Length: 324
Image (spheres, rainbow, N blue to C red):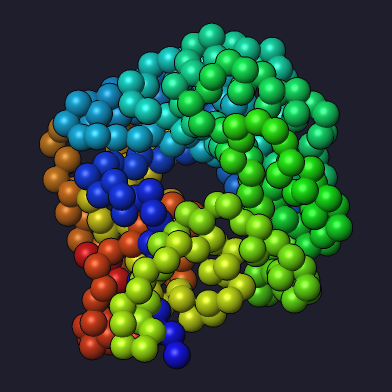
């Protein structure tokens, strides 16, 4: 019998001294996918606030090893995205649905190539030939890292499998993987995927971003797993997943200037428009929070040390994720 002890993101476990700063650039998105609700938060924020965010990030980059992750919405739709990419000094990971034109990405790479471009490929909205053309351009121009995540909508699973096979055979330096999504964001993840479907793609996953610590036959073991394997085969693993809202290595920044412990918490630690961030840096190191969300919220959650179940029960009966 296997007993799950802890699940965490490998990148963050291997870089425990790195600050992962997620910047919600804009909620605007040109796709209206029913498995995503981000586009309801559509707004463009003023450059003056973004300047303060960049000042804050660049300061943090002088005192900590830092990675800045630009997400949305669709961050490439923000009118200031080129200025953001140009002025942030830390290593950048740009999340995008890759819908902008080839000319846009030519302008982007004229500014910066030392970054990761993480692409979400939405089959119902995307064109394969255009995507391949842009992928070739990114590879030929030596972008540091390229990831292509195919959104696995079970309503079009045959098309998903066909697309997955196509890009997996793409003879370029692109990391391709599949992410299960659920229509209308309710029910069990992968509910419309048959056992045969799951058996087909799980062994083919090359994106094992998580590290699983478990006990088997009284021995503690460690192995890498993918998100899809977690979601479909480890039904009780949420109990052992530690998010980073209370840790020292993760912050979220809204383009209104709010610095947040995580993207699901509405109460900010401080605001970069209203507060002097230098007077509030201790709040990043010691957030002192307990998360009220059940299960893990998103791919940016970060594992903390295990906390005994007795302590959890003492604090609340309803909270699964205890943040140190």
